[in-house]
Image (cartoon, rainbow, N blue to C red; front, side, top):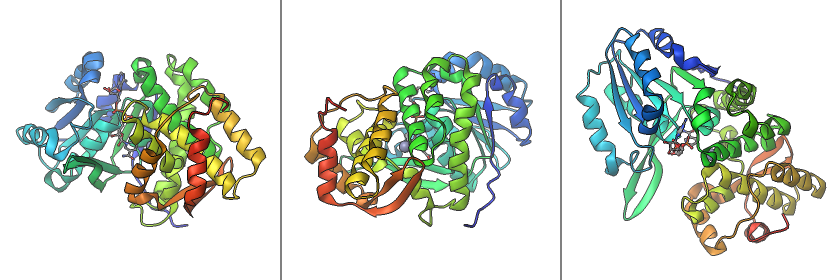
Length: 357
Ligand SMILES: NC(=O)c1ccc[n+]([C@@H]2O[C@H](COP(=O)([O-])OP(=O)(O)OC[C@H]3O[C@@H](n4cnc5c(N)ncnc54)[C@H](O)[C@@H]3O)[C@@H](O)[C@H]2O)c1
Ligand SMILES: [Zn+2]
């Protein structure tokens, strides 16, 4: 397996925001343009502004709301670009994004095309951002067409220079978003047997003392960055493994229309795809029960009802969904497995309204 050097400097820990300007100075910027989630600006504005004061160059702060509309080309994005070009941007400027995946996807995209690409830095503030969205170089914005929202339809592969994960941000993260991040961590557990289940179980208790989350976040980052380094521009099949749980997960997320968070939908996807792997003959009944009990012990999901035809319809419209990542046992998966429509229907029936999970 060939690997490509990715130079992103990733740091994880608590109190990192007290010195974030020192990190930025390492890039020697002529100015900084900062896109920031307006909730984060409200909660952490003092720390962030005092960091900018120590920077020694102009820092222009542009607040955005963390909504899909903000990252939609024919939504709010044009206004945002107009605001940015009025700032002091040049080739040696740094484009900083502070927020969850919505803001880092958007800021990463803008930074990657602004003046044909300037240096970008991410400060993720959600658990999902720290373990997934801020890593790997995928940037993206949406397009609205004929009443349909095409998510991440326009984007680039562009690696940030620095990703700074201050776990102190997680203390204010709403439970729904925390669960969403944990959902994505469960994917790493099922697919790579890391982090350990006990560690994942401890997240709810440890979120207020951020430092203890560091090893869990780092374990996930290590998995993702190794895969990304082997296939940075997704030309092969390696990165597909990261879609574990997402084939059925996306169908359920779409059907639930925002009421189930992305990461929680992925957990349902992991359960459904484990069942499908068993029906397809890849996973033993014992190993399936082990995965099921492990997932249920986290109390992130209990029961769900949905319209199966609608889930199937959403899955069919997603062109990536002809195959799925089958599970052979915890830690061993097989990407590119063709979906058997009967087994898919049985797997959705297993999830739908099942109170005995
Ligand atoms: N590029 C990638 O590889 C990749 C991977 C996964 C997801 N994504 C993208 O990430 C986006 C979802 O991002 P997300 O789940 O990180 O959430 P988000 O950015 O949508 O934020 C969720 C909510 O949490 C709030 N919030 C963020 N940090 C907070 C904090 N510390 N305290 C209080 N509130 C806070 C936000 O204001 C928002 O209301 C989607 O657009 C998805 O497409 C990208
Ligand atoms: Zn995901």
